[in-house]
Image 1 (tube, rainbow, N blue to C red):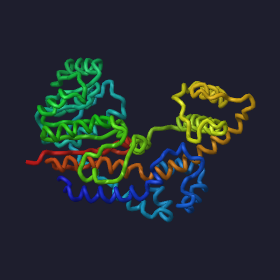
Image 2 (cartoon, helix red, strand yellow):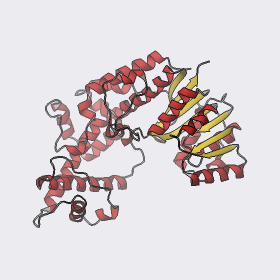
Image 3 (cartoon, rainbow, N blue to C red):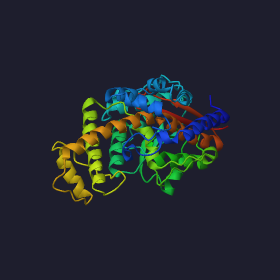
Length: 402
């Protein structure tokens, strides 16, 4: 059953108002700050943050609801904010998905694909279009479990060949098309399909599918968005008329916020992140002391092996990358200590930003859903799999009105 456009719009407006009124807490780059920037505006929140250690901050980042409960006394609005983000699970069918189709597919990806397939209405038939298909993992499951004809669009020719070879060997009714999703030719694929699907197509790639679908109006479109920051413009271009009226201005850094939730990082990864970020922030303190820049000075990606050589080696490498001349008497231990202290400050800021991660994603998802609703589709928003499988577990299901 579709969700009325008025309810989607009301939900969007509520989230939009709360995001607007708290931009100082979630916009901006934590690496730019030497201390919490909210000490005057939110002193009690800052006192609470100062009382947390790295372990407790990490635990709160992994459980936004517990975090909201903990800071509700200082930010009472967060309770309503997270409530607006609740999404029902989609009804799953009992459609069979033969495990032999999992050949070559990583286990977590296989589970995501299986879950996505199960929530596609069993009544759907006809010709399917798999958008940004890769090797056609999703398409092979759709074709085999539903005895459906699938066209799979993919940019990389090698992936098309691998996918076509597998489909041919399995006798699947799949046809791969090597092409650019942004090219005008790709719009014709949408015009000639009954159902268009995209699982984790990045940024403007899935937006382009929605735009083509508005023009072509296939029977249905099923999209699970991902990587909202991968856009061609410097700032987000709202799709729906409702979102276009919002004064929020979102740059690519803002759009990365929903993606900062991970469920797979182990302790080793966390430890390496502490070392690298502390080194980067320590070097930043050094370059500020040398008068190079009053703002955070980013340096390129570093080979992880260099981190094992210690902070001084990292600083000398970073200085070379940024044409910074280091004096002979640098107290590297002092600046490493500053970097480690700033790491804690960054974590405090990122913990607060966690509260706005899902709300911003819902803002973006609702913009897409309302856009489809404004253009002749009945729209539903569902959760199609558990967060533990992927935090990008939202499904937009748009069906052309009769």
